[in-house]
Image 1 (cartoon, helix red, strand yellow):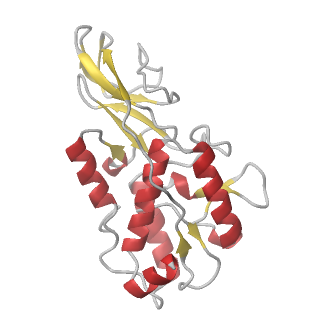
Image 2 (cartoon, one colour; image 1 turned 45 degrees about the vertical axis):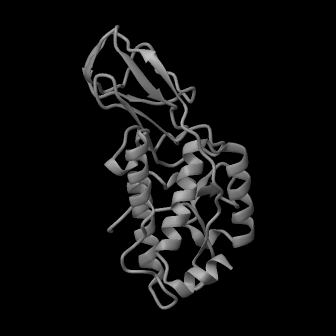
Image 3 (cartoon, one colour; image 1 turned 45 degrees about the horizontal axis):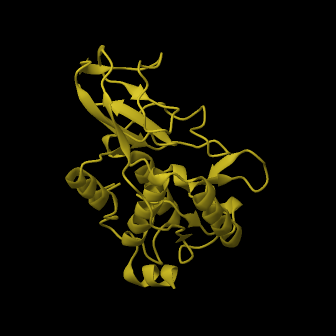
Length: 238
């Protein structure tokens, strides 16, 4: 894999049907300036809150780095619903995303990793770093997928890339046959049809996505289209 991926609904059948991307623009960059709590350690992973406010003390399972001084102010970005925050320095925090979601989209499934597994899962907030991160995340594959390409290989590459870049969460929808079970439309595309998956994905975006989910959805769509040969990309967007 050359670059990291995007969220979408995969159709049943041949490669010329491949995927339909469901996404719209929309994100902000809110956070909170705090006086850092008096804490010493090395790297802290924080989850479970979506208020944008850092707890005054680390959670029981936190891994910490750096030294926090009571007199030091720090910017704490909003905590992703599907991810968490990691302390990356004495006054720095960075959001990360990715993982299998719960069926009600309230947070990550109990089987999901509780800390980032790859640097590409981080979502920096500084303008320069954020722009570079988004640009590389959306570049697509060097070897483009076409009408005669192997769909199974492309599916596997896509899911691996989405997991590495923290965009896999938006590929999950509820199993049409089993209430409460979440399946990825990339890995389990044969269990979905295009019409119902597209409707479910749009509803989920409108009702449940936070700004990180929406940004990942948009980036995943762009990566997906940028990974297709021109002829197929045109068919998909018609």
